[in-house]
Amino acid sequence: MAFEHLKKGRMFRHFSLISLLMIPGVCGRAWSVEYSVPEECAMKGSTIYLSGRFKYPNNLTVTETFWTITPYGYKKYTNLSDEPHYKGRVKYSLQKQNFYLKLSDVSDMDQKIYYFGIMTNDVNQNRLFYPGIKLNVNVLSVVIFGEVIEGNQANLFCKTTCNLRHNPKIVWYNNSIPFSESVSTNELLLQSVGSDDTGRYSCAVTQYEHLPSPAVTLNVRYPPKKTSISVHPSTKIVKGSSVTLRCSCDSNPPAWTYHWFKENEASSVGSGQSYHISSFNSSHGGRFYCVAENYYGFQRSAAVTFTIKVKRQALHLGVISAAVMLSVVLIVLFKNRKPVSPSEEQNNRGLQHNGEIESPEGDYLTLDPTSRCADYDTLGNMNRSSSNTNDPEDQDPTYYNTDI
Image 1 (cartoon, one colour):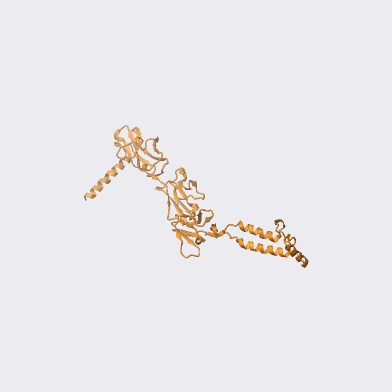
Image 2 (cartoon, one colour):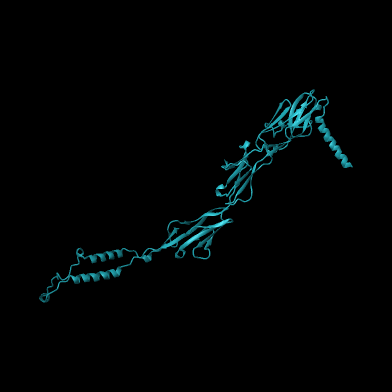
């Protein structure tokens, strides 16, 4: 019973307050107020107008109109224009029985209930009108639903914290550039996204395009692509030198594992983004490739081939060429020898008995370099060429790497 009595008492006081605004006043005239809307939605950073109409007894004189956010009654209020947070941002106007409040550069802190009040020449007739206008501040934000994977579709939603009047259209931006396709709703659907769709997306209301939402990054995930190998040093590689192979790729997120393989071998020869060979030798000849992997897949690189090219060893003609040359000379001399008659042979013997030896002209050709035969020239050139050839046993084989 006590609770019902208290409830009835509160209802009576509320009814009495409303009645004071609607029934005739002290002098038989009516007080009344009508706000344009019970709630208003304003864009953050914009300018908003709050308005309404009022009536008051004719025998009173209005000395001041004001707006406030402190609903403590007309005896205790703070004029909005005097508050530090609103100073310089509010402006009042009164046209006959219409009242207006202009609030510029709306911020999150402006989200409150605003009341219109009147001061008259009779202190007892001052009024603060309820229920006021509730101001909601609209903050735009872009929401991306789910994880965006290359080849799938992406859904972006322009979220608002309150409903603006007249259902305005939405403008979308990609990296601060208006979206190429015609989109006017608060939902943006991207079909079959790729890495090129990665960017910072924002949205704005057509009437307030200068007030876009904070940009949100569309992060498209994809497996490794463009996987390749670089070799350091990139010049020719000599036996015993140090060689480093580095694997790189384009992926999102970055590849977290790298494995190295040599063709025709069952298991990997190394792991990590770099593969290092400290002392290169003939056992490292072959084709090497790497495999880059992240959560969304993997890719194999093209192979890098290490080909061992050994310089051809020239035949050393030292003793062999000398023996061949001697044989040829003997043959040439034998072919050019003149036949000797018995009488000449006897005469030659006679000369020997006399102790005088004559030059055997006609019996042998003089080995004058200017009169050598073509066969001798050829072998002589071979001998000289042999004498200028370095000993291949003193040279290391040279190793080269070739991309394929």
